[in-house]
Length: 308
Image 1 (tube, one colour):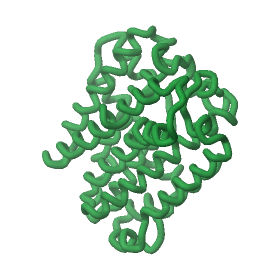
Image 2 (cartoon, one colour; image 1 turned 45 degrees about the vertical axis):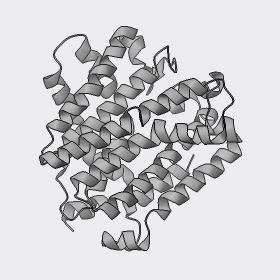
Image 3 (cartoon, helix red, strand yellow; image 1 turned 135 degrees about the vertical axis):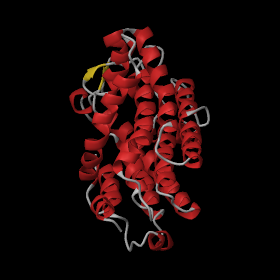
Image 4 (cartoon, one colour; image 1 turned 90 degrees about the horizontal axis):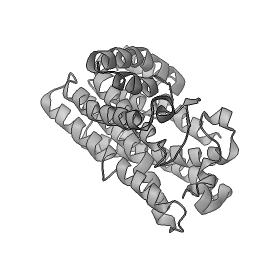
């Protein structure tokens, strides 16, 4: 195991995020400046991209890549991880639009359509979405790996993944839907992109098929937990704490884990998802990574999601 691998895999999640963001954040700014020159499109795209956030998905891709026998350098992960963040950012811009979640606040700042107008916000999202695949095409990996990354991201973000979840979310608003519909909505809308990020990391790190399957199961459970926790916090925290309008799910009659199962039921399902995330790290999987326990960086992430 290299010194970088050792440092990343044995750190806490905040430290791993900070280490990778020192590489990724300047890249995002510089690359958007280089790739987008038309105004006001550039400013609208850069505005939400630079607004911060947890950077969970790109960091997950990087950390997963460090599990491999021949892990890529952080610099090599800039284009793939950046592409994931472009997709995530576009989805937030479109989610906030009046026709969808109709939210004027994102990460404590005016939403993109409030700042730039609805038309420019739509176009900024379109630009981020398409630019993501250009970035993957430029990633410093062999052609087979780049193609696999494109396929993974398209599957995670497209009509069989995140976009499907967004459509299900809109269709279920104000409606009475079965439990399984809410579970599938969450898996598509949130968990699929988190899973796609982990799969891109697995491709970059040259993980085996068995290892990739385990990481995919881990990321799927993690993604479900992430959204269930978000559903809980929407009803228990303030707008200032959330950085977006609190109580919006209930006000808009959204189908969430809280509306479907109640607060206590949502909390139980959050713990079940986290248990499933831990369970993906079987003794055989751990041994394949030369580990005897869940790497601390992933254990810490699970722990953070367990806290409200």
